[in-house]
Image (cartoon, rainbow, N blue to C red):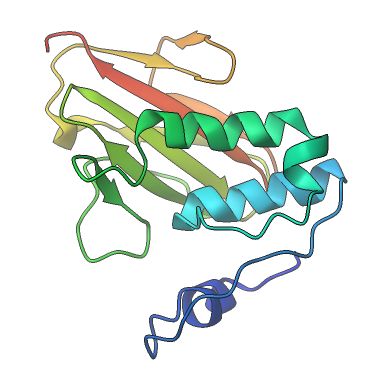
Length: 169
């Protein structure tokens, strides 16, 4: 509830004028604020933040979630990134109106969904057809839990990560 979506797209991304982005830094150690920070970071691919020592040092789940993204290869030259706001159509879509998502795809048959919920708690079903994975494994990379179907629940103003692995690779 702290920021409008239009602010993400104009002020932070600067896509209206090519302006230099500014980071979201006003975050304390409150779980709801940290969850909303991760939701915005993952939804829009804002992986350059100014850490004033609060989120990353004191809250291991925040540090761990960010590390999952970078350890997967986010930002590496051979990894494709499809931010929600980008020009390229992502190879994964969903059915939830308040979900924004950055798709990160490696060439080894693994894809990471960085999911941000800008609304209330919601159930999200993903369409994986465009990935072209005939047989895949879905895993929550934070818990290691496998999912039977391509759907998850995302809490209000929170985030989720979903790993998709092509088993026919």
